[in-house]
Image (cartoon, rainbow, N blue to C red; front, side):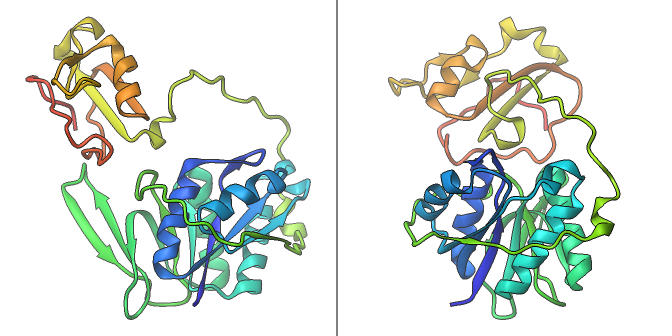
Length: 275
């Protein structure tokens, strides 16, 4: 079976959820080979193996943290050369999309961004994209070179599928041209304790007509199954539907909103939702 490269998004070896979703999608079209850059590969490898990675290619170089983007592209390109994959999957973060775009240019391949589904096709993987607040759905494939595809969070369920997950070193040469922009300092964003907005399985937003959080409620089945109202600004809702985020008093629509498969019983309040 052909191999599929999966770029690992992590924080010091703690694998982020979108990467596990990519492994689910990668298994549809081949055998996932994870590419882990930076520290923590030994910590990440068992998690990646549990979710289907047959190999974990790991490289740790100071340039990954000291310079912007390009050294990581060097490493992902080295993995591409070593594996000759059927496709390269990258999380659709701001950094992920830039890495994917630069890689596609270097290897002369087509690029698809912000996919929400992926399936095998006779002439290569077929990606589904949902655009304009889910008003349109497109299905497309890359016609030249190896497909490089970025995938939005929550595009697929996290499904364990234990595999070998053999940890292998990845030889990387960082080009001098990749050291053009140096990082002078980093300030970590303070955590709010809430899920990342881009990774939340369910986002509910109220408009200005709601009048404030005290009037904001989500109607849905609670833990007793009796359809009780859920309030508390999403505190109980997050327990019922992990990854829940609610907001109030928004004046702008929520893009690409869609019902969460994790909470199929959700019923929206009478005033509806933005988006």
